[in-house]
Length: 112
Image: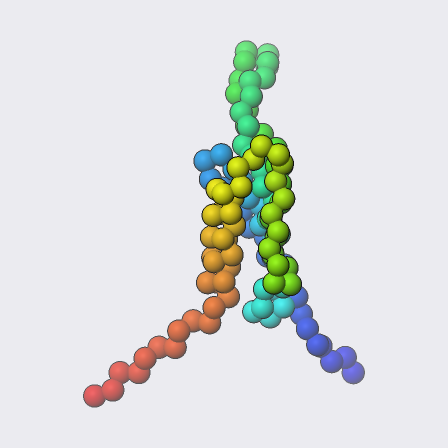
């Protein structure tokens, strides 16, 4: 008879700011965060020539990754990328995930 010892769930999401898109993937074991991976993509606008004339298109260039695993955090960005704004977003993502995993507060009983 199979006895299940653990079950993991993968969650994907995205955080978008003015200039960046952060692709977030995290792995849960029950309600425990096992690891979180975040791709940092810079939004770049460029003009391309089309039969109707020049048009501006947006594309995303990967400029780094950020992750948390086994109690460690690591940020790896291309040279020239400012680190501080990405750290703020990364900490907010970690905070948001922790809030999603936190148990809901028990409702208080009203007694008279």
